[in-house]
Length: 279
Image (cartoon, rainbow, N blue to C red; front, side, top):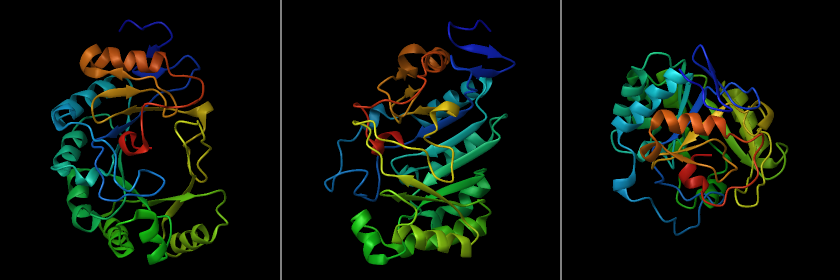
């Protein structure tokens, strides 16, 4: 395979210019969501991608297959909220049949997990990350605007029962894990054998981000990620306007350019929103 400038391929391993092994693909399967979290989108929602522009399951599967051939072995399904995408279990099954994927996971708000956890596990999903910022029902309603915490708690239990473990909890904080809500979420996770990750509120346009506490995100020096938007743009960095259209360039070329032009660190992203890039 002929390597492109600044993109080194050897034994199906992709290295960027800074010798980071790029093996992780995060896939936004939709920009739709059933919640309206205050740090993610305005109350009235956001302008949505046209349905005809959204990647089909067949397109996503072919993109992942090509990515795996190039060195991707970790895949995460995100949104929006991935469980609002019709037929999502079918997509998981399609992806699970691609040889070479070592870790197939999903990030979800958990609202529909009570219904989908078992079918997702049977389809081949390995594990889930579930968003939970508070254990106070009123605070949960304030943060999500429309949500009920009971649905998420049932979803967490369903994920554990289905074997989608380790179940990880994503908790958004203002500044520190010592905040009241964060401390209560941490105690809940310890009691229920869940792993918690604290994520400080970020701002794409102003380039405000930090390392995830208890996780690997936000650590630019070791970043191994690419992101695929629901309408087919491969992005080498969450905090960058760079993107490469898989339909226009072709899948392999889009991967090569995304890896070859992956920046050393994030700066700012003025063309995406968290609601359509999956965080």
